[in-house]
Amino acid sequence: MTRVFSGVKPTGHLTLGNYLGAMRQWVAVDQHRADALFCVVDLHALTVEHDPARVRRLSRQAATLLLAAGLDPELCTVFVQSHVDEHARLSYLLECVATDGEMRRMIQYKEKAARERVRGGSVRLSLLTYPVLMAADILAYGTDEVPVGDDQAQHVELSRDLAVRFNQRYGHAFVVPRATLPRVAARVMNLQDPTSKMGKSDDVGPGVVYLLDEPDVVRKKVMRAVTDSGREVVYDREARPGVANLLEILAACTGGSPADLSGVYESYGALKADTAEAVVELLRPVQERHKELCADPGYVEGVLRDGAERARAMARPIVDAAYRAIGLLPAV
Ligand code: TYM
Image 1 (cartoon, helix red, strand yellow):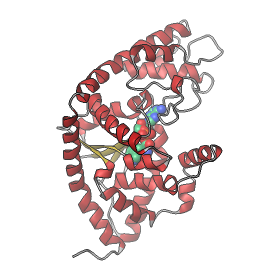
Image 2 (image 1 turned 180 degrees about the vertical axis):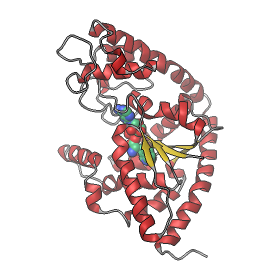
Image 3 (image 1 turned 120 degrees about the vertical axis):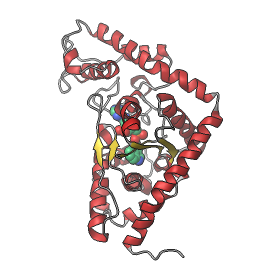
Image 4 (image 1 turned 30 degrees about the horizontal axis):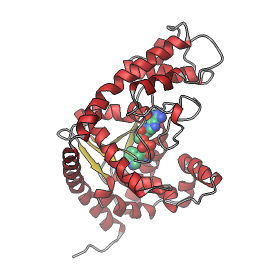
């Protein structure tokens, strides 16, 4: 059976971008057709300045939202990264096959490090090695497919390179994974700045729709979305990024394609109103289920406990084999 692995990082409240770009496919497709693991990658949240209590809170919230969105622990494994030691164990081995040049070429590293320096902060070493830990997440499970949004494609490509290199040098230890991207909404853009990604950590509130935003907040954010100077509602990502983003969001919510919606609307206002309602309806059941799950924290804890146990049992033999292959003496 195909093995699928993916994750979300608890550095902020989950967004519509996370949902349309990744979570929705996990729920609707991946958990049904594959042996799938979905992980709250809390170790990754420590790569930038963080508040320990907030990371803990966001990790619990992310796990609850994954379940609220429809991941079913009977069908897939949901767990927290730091509960399974194999991620950190394997990360070190992969640091011994990755190069520092390779890390410095990663787009997200360059962007985040530059932002950190502008703020006058220092860049954590773990931000540089972040993609190695992500490769460890993926390779520890013999993963075939990694369903992600477009912004993670380069990291998955690196995981492939590291798997191939390790296998060539030390003998076959890892499955070589590949990224799978959604057909529509692989990169949902910020509503206030449609040339940059809708990101949870950026906290540019008005341009980011959070999964737990109240319906009226969602409506306000969508109605105030920046559009372009033209008048016709046509789908053109280059020339009309604001309108294209709304068409993508609407298409993703209603199951159509943005190109088919091109020319259907007579005004930006009508497009925004329909998009706002589609998003509100999309989020409604997730928010209702989230409320129910918050009233039953013991259930979520139980899911994470079982999930970690299952994940450990899958990862341990793969990581142990990699330890032997690279030349480490087995513990007796
Ligand atoms: P993260 O937490 O930033 O995002 C989680 C998932 O949501 C997707 N995504 C988006 N898709 C479309 N439009 C957007 N605006 C948008 N924003 C986020 C991301 O592509 C991702 O699929 N490094 C990863 C977490 C990670 C991981 C892994 C993923 C750690 N280890 C192993 C897969 C496999 C990250 O920061 O995702």
